[in-house]
Image: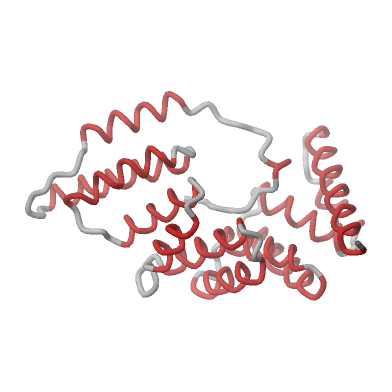
Length: 235
């Protein structure tokens, strides 16, 4: 599951997921967990069930995912995978305090880095950028080659501004090396470079956007965003 920060302009393309969503819902209905002794077959079913719930979350069907997770919790143990998915779904429906509780429970588990990333995203949603940065740093420390975590860290540092901009650029360039096709990373890097006044370097990144209309849209949004930040800084 990829969870990176994407600024409003960069969410221009939507996917029609209705048919896929219905397929997931039908499959989940047939895989309702049973309150039975754990067997290898049941364990496999539980894993598939949570994987399908993860698909609903990826589609933005957070309330549906929460409903199935609540149903799952009635008769099944709350594994770290379950807790992680619940945190994601809670964040998706703006239940921030509950999401924090779920993500915090992941400390000491194999989902610890994902938990810190989740905590950082909650703080970023609240525009608590210093707290977001600290959580993203912990996520990156645990998973230094995760491009999404590096992207989120760079995004938080971009918002902190001033002395954090060079750190943001460094982390976003690292993220781009790991995932060179990510539009989220690319767009955030353009924002950082333009905020730093590195127009030529920003232009080189923009020139790699093949579609002229997309390139122009990204450039305009970045320029407007930087101008807005500059105005706020002098008010």
